[in-house]
Image (tube, rainbow, N blue to C red; front, side, top):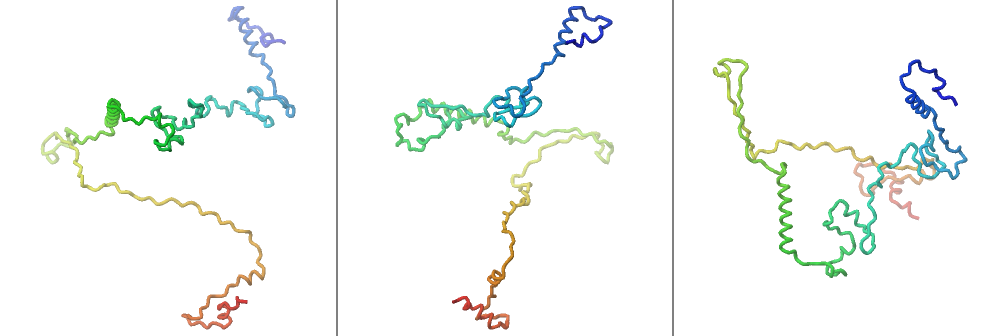
Amino acid sequence: MATLAGVLPKPRRQLLNSEQQNQFERKFDELTVTKQKELPPPYGKRVGWKPRSLDDFGDGGAFPEIHIAQYPLEMGRNKTGTSGGALPLQVDAEGNIKYDAIARQGHTESRIVHSQFKDLVPVNQRSDIEQITLDRPSEEEVKETTEKTREALEKIAAQPKNVKNDKPSEPTYIRYTPGQQGEAYNSGATQRIIRMVEMPVDPMEPPKFKHKKIPRGPPSPPAPVLHSPPRKVSAKEQQEWVIPPCISNWKNAKGYTIPLDKRLAADGRGLQE
């Protein structure tokens, strides 16, 4: 097989010596000779074949007839290598699974987490009451806990957002030179000294901020009313749906002349057999 360097004419000027020229031609031949890729088997002949590398997919996607996890072009693969933050399975000294590991996640070992049924049983009725110590803490433990609490409170109180500066700020002095000089503006003075002080706040002044109620948003859409498909009504059904008007035997405020058959129909005696 003739290489590309053998087909091309030799250069007129030799910029490289013979050793460098041979090394260059060797690298050029390695780049030009491409390795033939192994194509996947055709459709219908893939029984027992499983794609393992990116070359098995060629330039296409996954094979739907092969029921395994496939990642063409590394799409969908979890590149971080983690299991989504899943906690490892832990057991206690007796070999029981510690289901409270998820409740203890993010807390220190000293954090008390009640996650078992025995935590609901009163202490004086528990079977392991001999292992529970109900002694009062010693003076050293009380002092140590008090010192930790005091340090934590001091650290919170030392933050700038919790420190209130009730002292008024000191006045500042500004030297002011007016742009238009004249007796009408500054009584002949070329400069003025302005004393800036913080305006005192009236504690009895009502708040200037007004709460404005915004209109409510639109309510949730009503539930759809499902109707049966329309159908033709027979003459018998129409007659059954005829409801006689409500006619009183005692009151007739409008003074209508009510026919006798309507009064008898409203009496209800026609409904009795």
